[in-house]
Length: 187
Length: 172
Image 1 (cartoon, each protein chain N blue to C red):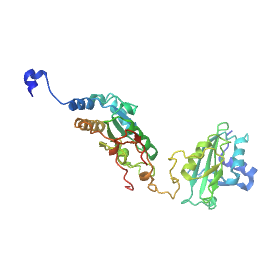
Image 2 (image 1 turned 90 degrees about the horizontal axis):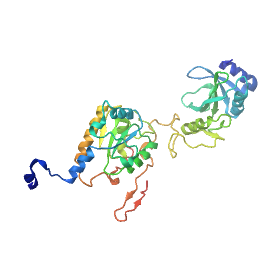
Image 3 (image 1 turned 120 degrees about the vertical axis):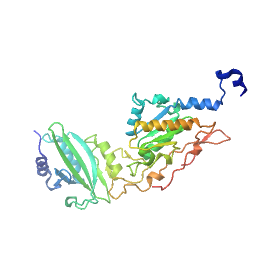
């Protein structure tokens, strides 16, 4: 039988006590769980391994910047890492949010619990600059490797900071008149 | 000319360059650089209803080394710009470039951190097509304009790497 989010949250609270706080998704109003980043791995491992919960599929890992949306349950933390979980066996969904502070944006990776976290965490790192400790591949996913900013942070201007005009682009090799050899010009 | 007086209407005289231009303009081989919805319109232009082969440009080449007309159709991000430049460099000369649609010409509605605001900052564009996306008739019109440009080409005056413009810094 599928479980409703309220029931899943109640079971989490029974097991982990006040490490799990109730919250609401700002968009859909769905009940979610808010946790501190220190407890994210045991709680997610429980959600995966408990036979009644059985969340065998991590739909997405992403992040939210609460710079302009201050919620009391964020307790002054700027970032929230969001884990959207689905159980294909039990046919229910649940959402867990972990608070991450601005001055130390680090959170443990869950790529050993679900392989699909590998790219989700990479994208969240690319867009928000959050480090996922334990993820073996923290290269940028979408932006160019040498891009200086984190574009989905709310204090990042939409038009960028001039990167689109001043990026180091490929310059063609120029053929000098005498030697007939191609020379790479400096970028 | 004297030869025509002797042979009458059975002989015409011309320059080699005029013959070369005539051959080139009737057999443009496009390199499609389709990255967005403009590419769909480009496919429609190639298909039977609009039929780009009426103007001899139906031989789409996915190898830049066999093509002489670059059609940039779609958004070009910072990451894609170096790829586009490399492909442009691989095309043999003489070569021409169409910037198709608002995104390729000016960034379009994507006035954002990652999108190049016009490929003409990095490529020598011969014909711009407005529209979002342009209709196939517009692409055909651009092709006809390219044919006129090809027709007026003089020998050894193709696009060389030196004519690639320097990017306009801080223009946006």
